[in-house]
Image 1 (cartoon, rainbow, N blue to C red):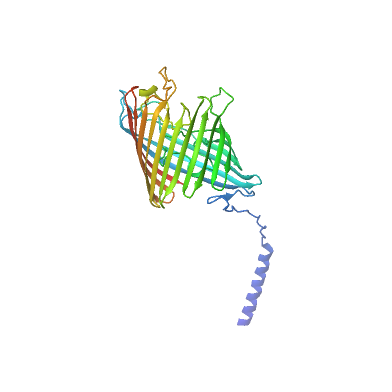
Image 2: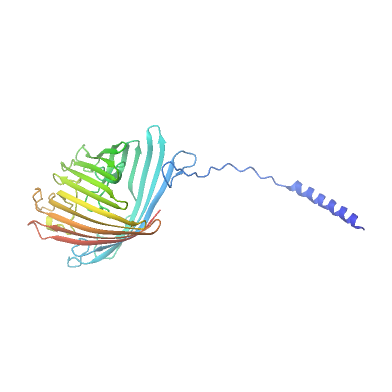
Length: 386
């Protein structure tokens, strides 16, 4: 057999095999079209379209670990003889924020849900070393349609959704004493080119009247300065509070907050505060409203990774209601005053990770009602944002 015959035979065999394979071939079905998640850049970073809709969704939140320090006269740090001790507590918090936004013919339609849970000290039985798991709760849930706002969130005494830098208190975690509060509410935000206004009717949870509380604020932005006026009427106490505030940038890296408060009686809308050991005033576990208060806080950003702030507050002539049969501080001339100073440092070693340290000293003087009450508290925090 010569080479030519071998080549012809091999070619014939290959053709035969190919024919047999072709007869057994499986043809795959066409894949179904898939709609991949698309980035939504209409409302800033982090949003994506819910597949099949024009609604943009954003998920964010944090996990934090706090170590709180209490010095002498801290109300929740007492030994078996009910004497104040120096101690610490630890708390872990997880928070999940969900936002949904889309444009409509009536304006922006926005929904916001905030879910969080805390694991921390069990203060119901002191000195046991036990912890509690608060369970996940809806800390906020509200919607906006154009200027309409309804749901559970901070009152417009605290902030408004269109108020920018006019909200809250100092640069620290709790903002000193400015009357933080949340409620079920319905309200409306009015927004201009460089001004804003907001009003809301708030369910005070009293249950004794058809009348809600009313809060509102108005302000404007000029350059780096926000000036605002806020007011609130507490229908249960039949008293009101007002505050005038300034939040302004100083240079390229400084920020100054100044707020002044006035209240005509005990109300949830004031520079409310609670002494660390407030039995010297009017029974334990009570929050008090000062007739007058002034708050100031300055923050300096030294680099993109480090900033620090100092703040202080003076409050005069506290009101309160009667507690445990004690005589109420019904007069604005109660003589009970307080002052507080605080320092804060925040370091961000990497993106989305914060290391925070705070220390605060608060002093109440009794004006003949009792001995003074002083407390030193501190906070060390590690927080991962996403």
